[in-house]
Length: 354
Image (tube, rainbow, N blue to C red):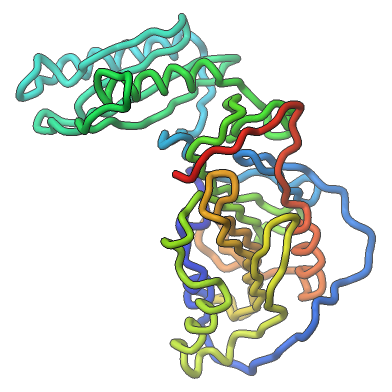
Protein backbone atom coordinates (compact mmCIF):
# COMPACT_ATOMS: atom_id res chain seq x y z
CA UNK A 1 0.00 0.00 0.00
CA UNK A 2 1.04 3.61 -0.48
CA UNK A 3 1.85 4.36 3.14
CA UNK A 4 4.19 7.31 3.60
CA UNK A 5 5.17 6.69 7.23
CA UNK A 6 6.81 3.47 8.44
CA UNK A 7 4.39 1.26 10.34
CA UNK A 8 6.72 1.11 13.35
CA UNK A 9 8.45 4.47 13.01
CA UNK A 10 10.85 5.67 15.71
CA UNK A 11 10.20 9.31 16.51
CA UNK A 12 13.90 10.23 16.45
CA UNK A 13 14.24 9.29 12.79
CA UNK A 14 11.66 11.87 11.74
CA UNK A 15 14.01 14.68 12.76
CA UNK A 16 17.27 12.98 11.81
CA UNK A 17 16.10 12.19 8.28
CA UNK A 18 14.82 15.67 7.51
CA UNK A 19 17.67 17.79 8.84
CA UNK A 20 19.85 18.58 5.84
CA UNK A 21 21.65 21.82 6.76
CA UNK A 22 22.50 23.96 9.76
CA UNK A 23 20.93 27.22 10.90
CA UNK A 24 19.81 29.19 13.94
CA UNK A 25 17.87 27.58 16.77
CA UNK A 26 14.56 29.31 17.53
CA UNK A 27 12.32 28.46 20.47
CA UNK A 28 8.62 29.29 20.23
CA UNK A 29 7.32 29.11 23.81
CA UNK A 30 3.73 28.51 24.79
CA UNK A 31 0.90 26.91 22.86
CA UNK A 32 -0.77 29.84 21.13
CA UNK A 33 -2.45 29.29 17.76
CA UNK A 34 -4.39 31.46 15.38
CA UNK A 35 -7.79 32.34 16.84
CA UNK A 36 -9.99 31.65 13.82
CA UNK A 37 -13.14 29.57 13.51
CA UNK A 38 -12.61 25.82 13.03
CA UNK A 39 -12.56 24.72 9.39
CA UNK A 40 -15.14 22.30 7.91
CA UNK A 41 -13.80 18.81 8.49
CA UNK A 42 -14.03 15.28 7.05
CA UNK A 43 -14.06 12.35 9.47
CA UNK A 44 -11.92 9.25 8.94
CA UNK A 45 -12.30 5.89 10.68
CA UNK A 46 -9.31 3.68 11.54
CA UNK A 47 -9.80 0.62 13.71
CA UNK A 48 -12.14 1.75 16.48
CA UNK A 49 -10.97 5.37 16.37
CA UNK A 50 -11.97 8.54 14.51
CA UNK A 51 -9.97 11.58 13.43
CA UNK A 52 -10.94 14.70 11.46
CA UNK A 53 -9.05 16.50 8.69
CA UNK A 54 -9.97 19.54 6.56
CA UNK A 55 -12.92 18.89 4.27
CA UNK A 56 -11.78 17.39 0.99
CA UNK A 57 -8.80 15.57 2.50
CA UNK A 58 -8.37 11.99 1.26
CA UNK A 59 -7.08 8.70 2.59
CA UNK A 60 -3.89 7.95 0.66
CA UNK A 61 -2.63 4.70 2.14
CA UNK A 62 -2.62 2.46 5.14
CA UNK A 63 -1.58 -0.75 6.87
CA UNK A 64 -4.09 -2.82 8.83
CA UNK A 65 -3.66 -5.80 11.12
CA UNK A 66 -6.66 -7.41 12.80
CA UNK A 67 -6.35 -10.42 15.13
CA UNK A 68 -2.87 -11.14 13.68
CA UNK A 69 -4.37 -11.10 10.16
CA UNK A 70 -2.97 -8.75 7.52
CA UNK A 71 -5.62 -6.92 5.51
CA UNK A 72 -4.68 -6.36 1.89
CA UNK A 73 -6.01 -3.34 0.02
CA UNK A 74 -9.49 -4.11 -1.44
CA UNK A 75 -9.66 -4.43 -5.23
CA UNK A 76 -12.53 -3.57 -7.54
CA UNK A 77 -13.55 -6.51 -9.76
CA UNK A 78 -16.55 -8.37 -11.13
CA UNK A 79 -17.82 -11.53 -9.44
CA UNK A 80 -16.85 -13.73 -12.42
CA UNK A 81 -13.29 -12.38 -12.33
CA UNK A 82 -13.14 -13.01 -8.59
CA UNK A 83 -14.17 -16.66 -8.98
CA UNK A 84 -11.81 -17.13 -11.94
CA UNK A 85 -8.86 -15.77 -9.94
CA UNK A 86 -9.60 -18.14 -7.07
CA UNK A 87 -9.78 -21.10 -9.45
CA UNK A 88 -6.44 -20.12 -11.01
CA UNK A 89 -4.88 -19.77 -7.57
CA UNK A 90 -6.10 -23.21 -6.52
CA UNK A 91 -4.80 -24.82 -9.73
CA UNK A 92 -1.40 -23.22 -9.22
CA UNK A 93 -1.09 -24.46 -5.64
CA UNK A 94 -2.25 -27.94 -6.63
CA UNK A 95 0.24 -28.11 -9.48
CA UNK A 96 3.28 -27.63 -7.24
CA UNK A 97 4.36 -30.64 -5.21
CA UNK A 98 5.31 -30.48 -1.54
CA UNK A 99 8.14 -32.65 -0.25
CA UNK A 100 5.85 -34.62 2.07
CA UNK A 101 2.36 -33.98 0.65
CA UNK A 102 0.76 -34.25 -2.81
CA UNK A 103 0.80 -30.47 -3.37
CA UNK A 104 1.24 -27.11 -1.67
CA UNK A 105 -2.54 -26.82 -1.27
CA UNK A 106 -3.70 -28.45 1.96
CA UNK A 107 -7.31 -27.28 2.24
CA UNK A 108 -10.00 -25.21 0.53
CA UNK A 109 -12.98 -24.02 2.57
CA UNK A 110 -16.08 -22.38 1.07
CA UNK A 111 -18.02 -20.58 3.84
CA UNK A 112 -20.44 -19.19 1.22
CA UNK A 113 -20.75 -18.61 -2.53
CA UNK A 114 -18.48 -15.55 -2.52
CA UNK A 115 -15.99 -16.57 0.17
CA UNK A 116 -12.99 -18.89 0.07
CA UNK A 117 -10.26 -19.95 2.48
CA UNK A 118 -7.01 -21.41 1.14
CA UNK A 119 -4.63 -23.28 3.45
CA UNK A 120 -1.27 -23.99 1.82
CA UNK A 121 2.47 -24.35 2.23
CA UNK A 122 4.47 -21.34 1.08
CA UNK A 123 7.06 -23.56 -0.62
CA UNK A 124 7.86 -27.24 -1.08
CA UNK A 125 10.39 -27.27 1.78
CA UNK A 126 8.33 -25.50 4.46
CA UNK A 127 6.83 -27.89 7.04
CA UNK A 128 6.34 -25.82 10.21
CA UNK A 129 4.04 -22.94 9.25
CA UNK A 130 1.02 -23.03 6.93
CA UNK A 131 -0.31 -19.94 5.15
CA UNK A 132 -4.02 -19.09 5.37
CA UNK A 133 -5.68 -16.71 2.91
CA UNK A 134 -9.29 -15.60 3.24
CA UNK A 135 -11.17 -14.07 0.30
CA UNK A 136 -14.58 -12.43 0.04
CA UNK A 137 -16.38 -10.63 -2.77
CA UNK A 138 -19.19 -8.13 -2.20
CA UNK A 139 -20.59 -5.15 -4.13
CA UNK A 140 -17.90 -5.30 -6.80
CA UNK A 141 -14.99 -5.46 -4.30
CA UNK A 142 -12.56 -8.28 -3.50
CA UNK A 143 -11.30 -8.49 0.08
CA UNK A 144 -8.17 -10.48 0.88
CA UNK A 145 -6.92 -11.42 4.37
CA UNK A 146 -3.67 -13.22 5.19
CA UNK A 147 -2.46 -15.04 8.29
CA UNK A 148 -0.55 -18.21 9.17
CA UNK A 149 -0.53 -21.04 11.70
CA UNK A 150 2.40 -22.88 13.24
CA UNK A 151 2.58 -26.43 14.46
CA UNK A 152 2.64 -25.57 18.19
CA UNK A 153 -0.05 -27.03 20.52
CA UNK A 154 -3.53 -25.68 19.70
CA UNK A 155 -5.81 -23.72 22.05
CA UNK A 156 -8.12 -25.80 24.27
CA UNK A 157 -10.94 -27.41 22.32
CA UNK A 158 -9.16 -27.26 18.95
CA UNK A 159 -7.46 -30.19 17.23
CA UNK A 160 -4.69 -28.07 15.65
CA UNK A 161 -3.40 -24.54 15.19
CA UNK A 162 -4.50 -24.77 11.58
CA UNK A 163 -8.08 -25.57 12.57
CA UNK A 164 -8.09 -22.68 15.03
CA UNK A 165 -6.75 -20.21 12.44
CA UNK A 166 -9.31 -21.37 9.88
CA UNK A 167 -12.13 -20.96 12.41
CA UNK A 168 -10.93 -17.40 13.16
CA UNK A 169 -10.81 -16.61 9.43
CA UNK A 170 -14.39 -17.89 9.02
CA UNK A 171 -15.49 -15.63 11.87
CA UNK A 172 -13.77 -12.64 10.29
CA UNK A 173 -15.37 -13.26 6.87
CA UNK A 174 -18.80 -13.69 8.46
CA UNK A 175 -18.50 -10.31 10.24
CA UNK A 176 -17.15 -8.44 7.20
CA UNK A 177 -19.04 -5.52 5.64
CA UNK A 178 -18.22 -3.19 2.77
CA UNK A 179 -17.82 0.51 3.58
CA UNK A 180 -17.12 3.82 1.86
CA UNK A 181 -14.39 5.98 3.41
CA UNK A 182 -17.00 8.50 4.61
CA UNK A 183 -19.25 5.78 6.06
CA UNK A 184 -18.78 5.81 9.85
CA UNK A 185 -20.29 2.64 11.39
CA UNK A 186 -22.38 2.86 14.54
CA UNK A 187 -21.84 -0.79 15.54
CA UNK A 188 -18.72 -1.75 17.51
CA UNK A 189 -15.95 -3.15 15.37
CA UNK A 190 -12.82 -2.44 13.31
CA UNK A 191 -12.69 -0.03 10.33
CA UNK A 192 -10.25 -0.38 7.48
CA UNK A 193 -10.08 1.07 3.98
CA UNK A 194 -13.20 -0.10 2.14
CA UNK A 195 -14.44 -2.38 4.90
CA UNK A 196 -15.57 -3.00 8.47
CA UNK A 197 -15.36 -6.06 10.75
CA UNK A 198 -18.21 -6.07 13.26
CA UNK A 199 -17.14 -7.28 16.71
CA UNK A 200 -17.82 -5.85 20.19
CA UNK A 201 -14.65 -7.50 21.54
CA UNK A 202 -11.26 -5.91 20.98
CA UNK A 203 -8.87 -8.26 19.23
CA UNK A 204 -5.16 -7.64 18.70
CA UNK A 205 -5.73 -4.59 16.49
CA UNK A 206 -3.25 -2.32 14.71
CA UNK A 207 -3.55 0.32 12.01
CA UNK A 208 -1.53 3.00 10.30
CA UNK A 209 -3.09 5.47 7.86
CA UNK A 210 -2.04 8.52 5.85
CA UNK A 211 -4.43 11.39 5.08
CA UNK A 212 -3.48 13.88 2.35
CA UNK A 213 -4.50 17.37 3.43
CA UNK A 214 -6.89 19.17 1.07
CA UNK A 215 -5.32 22.22 -0.60
CA UNK A 216 -1.80 21.28 0.52
CA UNK A 217 -0.20 18.63 -1.73
CA UNK A 218 2.94 18.65 0.42
CA UNK A 219 1.11 17.93 3.70
CA UNK A 220 -0.26 14.75 5.23
CA UNK A 221 -1.37 13.45 8.60
CA UNK A 222 -0.45 9.96 9.81
CA UNK A 223 -2.30 8.03 12.52
CA UNK A 224 -0.79 4.86 13.92
CA UNK A 225 -1.69 2.64 16.86
CA UNK A 226 -0.93 -0.80 18.26
CA UNK A 227 -1.18 -2.55 21.64
CA UNK A 228 2.08 -2.89 23.49
CA UNK A 229 2.93 -3.97 27.03
CA UNK A 230 4.39 -1.11 29.07
CA UNK A 231 7.52 -3.13 29.86
CA UNK A 232 8.33 -3.26 26.13
CA UNK A 233 8.02 0.46 25.47
CA UNK A 234 10.95 2.61 24.45
CA UNK A 235 11.60 5.84 26.34
CA UNK A 236 8.90 8.53 26.16
CA UNK A 237 8.84 10.75 23.06
CA UNK A 238 10.49 13.84 24.60
CA UNK A 239 13.37 11.78 26.01
CA UNK A 240 13.99 10.14 22.65
CA UNK A 241 13.86 13.44 20.78
CA UNK A 242 16.26 15.13 23.20
CA UNK A 243 18.74 12.29 22.78
CA UNK A 244 18.28 12.38 19.02
CA UNK A 245 19.06 16.09 18.84
CA UNK A 246 22.18 15.58 20.94
CA UNK A 247 23.47 13.00 18.47
CA UNK A 248 23.10 15.53 15.61
CA UNK A 249 25.73 17.80 17.10
CA UNK A 250 25.96 21.16 15.28
CA UNK A 251 23.22 20.07 12.85
CA UNK A 252 20.75 20.37 15.74
CA UNK A 253 20.90 24.14 15.30
CA UNK A 254 18.85 23.69 12.11
CA UNK A 255 15.91 22.37 14.11
CA UNK A 256 13.49 25.06 15.31
CA UNK A 257 11.23 23.94 18.13
CA UNK A 258 7.75 25.45 17.94
CA UNK A 259 6.29 23.59 20.91
CA UNK A 260 6.99 20.58 23.10
CA UNK A 261 5.69 19.12 26.33
CA UNK A 262 2.99 17.02 27.93
CA UNK A 263 -0.38 17.05 26.19
CA UNK A 264 -3.61 15.18 26.87
CA UNK A 265 -5.89 14.31 23.95
CA UNK A 266 -9.28 13.20 25.20
CA UNK A 267 -8.57 10.51 27.80
CA UNK A 268 -5.09 9.81 26.42
CA UNK A 269 -2.13 11.35 28.24
CA UNK A 270 0.80 11.88 25.90
CA UNK A 271 3.58 14.18 24.72
CA UNK A 272 4.02 16.39 21.67
CA UNK A 273 7.15 17.58 19.88
CA UNK A 274 6.64 20.17 17.12
CA UNK A 275 9.58 21.36 15.03
CA UNK A 276 10.51 22.75 11.64
CA UNK A 277 13.55 21.46 9.75
CA UNK A 278 15.30 22.31 6.49
CA UNK A 279 14.33 20.22 3.48
CA UNK A 280 16.18 19.33 0.30
CA UNK A 281 14.30 21.99 -1.66
CA UNK A 282 15.88 24.81 0.34
CA UNK A 283 12.77 25.55 2.40
CA UNK A 284 11.54 24.31 5.75
CA UNK A 285 9.21 21.48 6.62
CA UNK A 286 7.00 20.92 9.65
CA UNK A 287 7.44 17.69 11.60
CA UNK A 288 4.84 17.48 14.37
CA UNK A 289 4.44 14.39 16.55
CA UNK A 290 2.12 13.49 19.42
CA UNK A 291 2.47 10.13 21.11
CA UNK A 292 1.01 8.20 24.01
CA UNK A 293 2.46 5.00 25.36
CA UNK A 294 -0.96 3.62 26.26
CA UNK A 295 -1.54 1.32 29.20
CA UNK A 296 -0.42 -1.97 27.68
CA UNK A 297 -3.90 -3.34 26.88
CA UNK A 298 -5.80 -3.85 23.63
CA UNK A 299 -8.24 -0.99 24.24
CA UNK A 300 -5.58 1.44 25.52
CA UNK A 301 -2.96 1.08 22.76
CA UNK A 302 0.16 3.02 21.96
CA UNK A 303 -0.86 5.85 19.60
CA UNK A 304 1.21 8.14 17.38
CA UNK A 305 -0.19 11.04 15.33
CA UNK A 306 1.99 13.09 12.98
CA UNK A 307 1.67 16.10 10.69
CA UNK A 308 4.28 16.49 7.97
CA UNK A 309 4.65 19.32 5.46
CA UNK A 310 7.16 19.75 2.64
CA UNK A 311 6.74 16.10 1.67
CA UNK A 312 8.16 15.11 -1.73
CA UNK A 313 5.83 14.45 -4.67
CA UNK A 314 5.34 11.11 -6.46
CA UNK A 315 8.54 11.77 -8.45
CA UNK A 316 10.53 12.31 -5.23
CA UNK A 317 10.84 16.04 -5.87
CA UNK A 318 10.81 18.32 -2.83
CA UNK A 319 7.63 20.36 -2.49
CA UNK A 320 7.58 23.74 -0.75
CA UNK A 321 5.00 24.15 1.97
CA UNK A 322 2.56 27.05 1.75
CA UNK A 323 1.71 26.82 5.44
CA UNK A 324 3.08 29.35 7.87
CA UNK A 325 4.03 28.13 11.33
CA UNK A 326 0.81 29.62 12.69
CA UNK A 327 -1.32 27.86 10.08
CA UNK A 328 0.43 24.56 10.72
CA UNK A 329 -0.17 24.89 14.47
CA UNK A 330 -3.83 25.76 13.86
CA UNK A 331 -4.27 22.69 11.64
CA UNK A 332 -2.39 20.50 14.11
CA UNK A 333 -4.57 21.49 17.06
CA UNK A 334 -7.80 20.97 15.10
CA UNK A 335 -6.75 17.53 13.84
CA UNK A 336 -5.17 16.30 17.07
CA UNK A 337 -8.04 17.42 19.29
CA UNK A 338 -10.49 15.54 17.06
CA UNK A 339 -8.94 12.12 17.75
CA UNK A 340 -11.43 9.98 19.66
CA UNK A 341 -12.92 6.55 20.21
CA UNK A 342 -15.75 5.97 17.74
CA UNK A 343 -19.13 6.10 19.53
CA UNK A 344 -21.30 3.02 19.01
CA UNK A 345 -24.87 1.92 19.64
CA UNK A 346 -23.67 -0.95 21.83
CA UNK A 347 -20.74 -1.37 24.25
CA UNK A 348 -17.28 -2.08 22.92
CA UNK A 349 -16.16 -4.82 25.26
CA UNK A 350 -12.55 -4.52 26.36
CA UNK A 351 -10.16 -7.42 26.08
CA UNK A 352 -7.24 -8.46 28.25
CA UNK A 353 -3.72 -7.49 27.33
CA UNK A 354 -2.19 -9.56 24.50
